[in-house]
Amino acid sequence: MMECITDFNGLETVAKLAPIGTALIALSAAIIALLAILAQMHIARRRAAIDFFLKTEVDRTAIDLSYRRILVTEGIRRQRLELAI
Image (cartoon, rainbow, N blue to C red):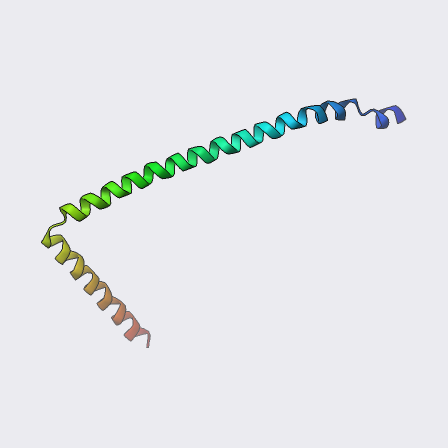
């Protein structure tokens, strides 16, 4: 029974492989970070293109409708505040 407790051969093998495991975990974290950065760049390009086209293509009717929407939502908020008081 004491031989089982003092036998560290299995732990020595694990200790020899620990640096490799650490390197693999660090490498996988770096790959995930790189993929996240690339995804963010892709999304930013899409948003920039959409913003550019919206700014150049928006006509006067769309601007008027947006302004009316803002006025209506402010009116609704005021009514809710009056009802709450």
